[in-house]
Amino acid sequence: MIEVAKRLQEVEEYYFSKKLREVALLKAQGKPIINLGIGSPDLEPPIKASMKLQDCLLDEKAHQYQSYQGLPEFREEISNFYKRHYNVDLSSQTEVLPLMGSKEGIMHISMAFLNKGDKVLVPNPGYPTYASVAKLLEAKPLYYDLKESRNWLPDFRALERMNLERVKIMWINYPHMPTGRNADNKFYDKVIAFGKRHDILIVNDNPYSFVLNKKPISILRYKNAKEVCLELNSLSKTFNMAGWRVGTLVGNYDFVSAVLRVKSNMDSGMFYGIQKGAIEALKCSDIWFQSLNSVYQKRQKLIWELAKKLKCTYYRNATGLFVWAKLPTQYKSEEFTDMVLKEYSIFITPGTVFGSNGEGYVRFSLCADVEVIKEAIARI
Ligand SMILES: Cc1ncc(COP(=O)(O)O)c(C=O)c1O
Image: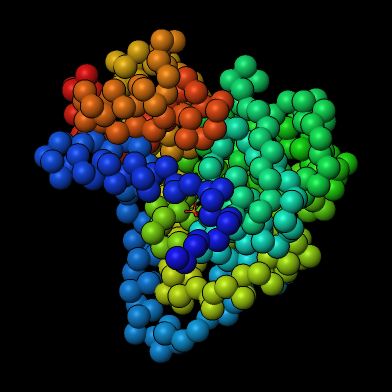
């Protein structure tokens, strides 16, 4: 009998990986499923990015191994992007590391900084990968509460009261998935001070800053941030390039080079055409962001209508790719989403996928065409 590694006993298959199999089965049985569960952008990437990728196929350099650090011109463009949109200065030589999506960065950062038995502060609710990666590395996720009553921001007094021994990393993610809440200047100053006080690496996972968000913010804009912070960013949602697998890690040289030590032992560079296409995307003018957001605004309004029909309440100033909605009090999240799937063939995500504080909430994705959302509304 060949046994899997012990670390896998701690980690379950990703919720969507399991649930989408069930949804596919229902579809195969002829159920007209509307998928408002997963946040996979359905819109086109910038056309010049796709054209560039296509042109690159005929370039002989395109098919060779690429640099572990990414093309210098790609790093330069990431640095320009950070200056233009976040007013952050980054050295493209030492403070930028292109990644295959921000999800791989979560693993690489964790591998670079965590030893067995270390602890990691993880938001509840939050993106499930932070905790599962910690578990894969035999580190311990320590959940910190986010509550609607505190606008889904952490309570620093409660954090200070926690046993922070062996805590090496704190994951934060604003604009926050799944709630869509934003953080303010005070929060960033506080979290940086917290990281400095306790020698905790603060990692801001920032893939949603350009979706329905008037003021994109990078944590690196704040005083002392480079001393204790890293930031992950991604082209998945900003440029509808989720399947390209392209993102970046930014931060000080010491941290970034530690992550590069891990990464350079795991892959052999990112496909040339993807890097060249990504450069074109990063150069997009403000018109790109305006048109992206005008589509999401229309969808968001319709999803609000759908949520209302399901007797859910929601917050109107939310950012990001989702509507996070509170259920009528008599319902539990999974019971509600199973009911919606069974009765109306609409797949939405129970809040509990993101942690126990997601109980009583559901998440609707904006990654569906207006006609599809109208059909969902008509079914209720
Ligand atoms: C909070 C959060 N972080 C990271 C990711 C991963 O994004 P990427 O496609 O850049 O790996 C997601 C994707 O859904 C996300 O919601």
